Figure 1 (cartoon, helix red, strand yellow):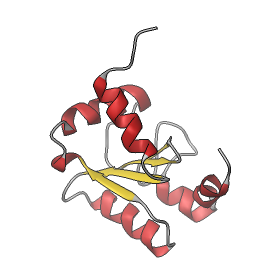
Figure 2 (figure 1 turned 180 degrees about the vertical axis):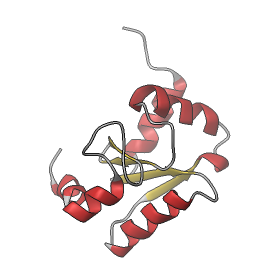
Figure 3 (figure 1 turned 90 degrees about the horizontal axis):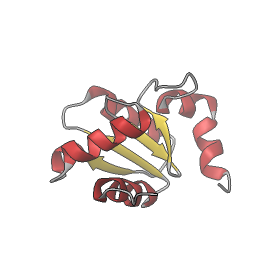
Length: 112
């Protein structure tokens, strides 16, 4: 097996750094909506702006290739990709949807 690329390792490290990680860009309306939704429910999160990363484009490409997600925000809960603001590659995905239906809290409370 080949070892993961430095970018894959960096993504894994960043995603593992907090229970909720939101990858965003400046001026992104959906990113603001997700952050507001998380804050309104008292969910702590780490925001990582692609704009502020020296390797932002490469990290974004890694998320795209791994999770089939091309838009921002890209939200991770306990290391698991949960999609963007309202949707994702799978029907259950979307941070606001998971906040509304209790799925996000369930993920945070589980002992994964």
